[in-house]
Picture 1 (tube, rainbow, N blue to C red):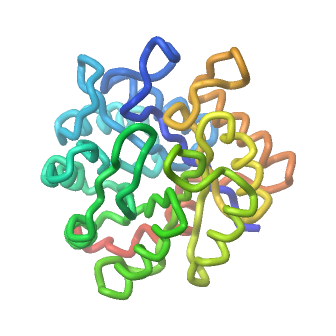
Picture 2: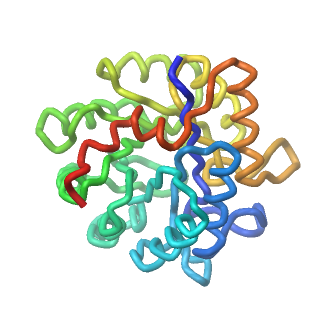
Length: 278
């Protein structure tokens, strides 16, 4: 098997200090959390920005402060910025495109509209077409976030229409209420639907995090961990990002699969495809 890419989703837009005081809640804390995760073996850091008040933000200035902390520490992790800011509002497009101004390696690309817990996660077809075009123009590779099987079909259709460039990189997010269940048979079916040669990663939310990590490692895919997906290390014990990354690294080592460096992750994910842009 090729080396395992460990991605760490440092914090989302929903977690609170009451849930877990280890969730980073300002730009400097998020940047430091990225460095800590990288030191434990994360080749990719997935970033939702929060401002100085802890509010979810899509501001390039706030993202830039996070990146400054990461780079000043000599951290070469692959940076993956979210484009899901304001996704609970149907027509707030420019705020979601703003992160692309920073020309990072990756940005998230959520492949469809869905019920998400108690809300609606908006990703209209015309928004996805525009997002794909803007990512290409900015030299940013899309990480195709797949919450349900139908989103794979959306991604393949957008590829066929010329809005996404192969090889496509898929990130399966399983166990969200409104999305696909975090089950082995579901993950196997999703993987079976992918075009040959497509790199893929999987994560499970909440208590499903560790089982999906293990399944992805065993199946030859890559995997994501971190406090965005799960705030507990075990029942009754809060987690930290470095702790969750270290657990996945140890699991991969036990399964005799090497862990990818950021340089290897860039090669596996073909992140040089837009090298002349950005």
